[in-house]
Length: 414
Image (cartoon, rainbow, N blue to C red):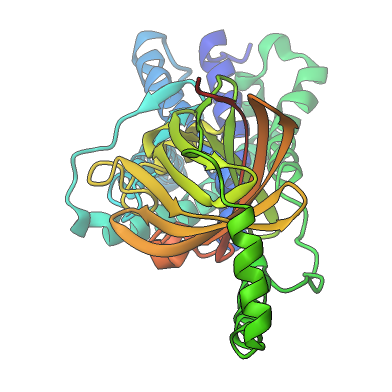
């Protein structure tokens, strides 16, 4: 009767084999996916750490439970033992070099195993990154070779030598399991390929960025101002008389932002769109809607409160590649005066200070409601490179413009 491995060893053997097949199927595709493979990359790290944990358990079981005796000696037996040792080295080394690779990368991407358990970075020098990267790739190739040698040796024993070697890893000598268990490996490959993102469609022509449209509007406004400057004196006098008649009575009212407002942002990323928002922000607003030139606006945003709804990406946002929160915890927008662009529609040109850089910035907004309560909604387009946001290797797929939107209710102070 063929001696078998313990049930625990059998389960670990096939589980690790299926997970390795999944890792190989996913791993080779990651380099070509760019930013589109971000979520898949997190899965790759999570499964790698699971393989490391299961391998450690497998080693413990190997010395805890008795193993079947060798069926072959000589150089063939030595080769089989060497393949086994190599496989264990691969199952330990691949996850460890991957862990080292992530820990020494320029962009410190946080790792949450399966979105739940945080994995700390190893305390390794950045100079070891290249070694870890090369070692990880080399181990992957060696692992595939050892995987194939191990399978070929098992098939040789079972079918050519007829010693029933594979039954050692099949509970109860079940023919159904003899087919089903190896099929798990194929299932791992299929699963790995199935979760890869669909090929990216060719980009379609898009209208000019909003920023370019805004520049055109500014140019048109400048031309209009130039025409007005050369208008007859009687027109200027008429305009002055009209302005005098429309001068506000008393100081402009101040407004208090009510709870429930939102400041959101979105940006293209390799054909997809990342959307997020800021959970903490304040706004000090003084403005008479009938006299927008009276506006005095200041908005302060807590940059650490940014979220895109993904724990991995949220962990990257405070870093120096994006918002640099440690040195620049807040961003501010300040504008003195606004102009009407239509009924209840306005444009305010001011200064945005973000990540320690101050640049001119315009926002557009609309008001609805009347009297003491007004609904405010608006938008802006921000050139992120001007503020050094998205300046690292993981940002190459991001579009240059960030679309900002805001929506809140303001109540006039009495």
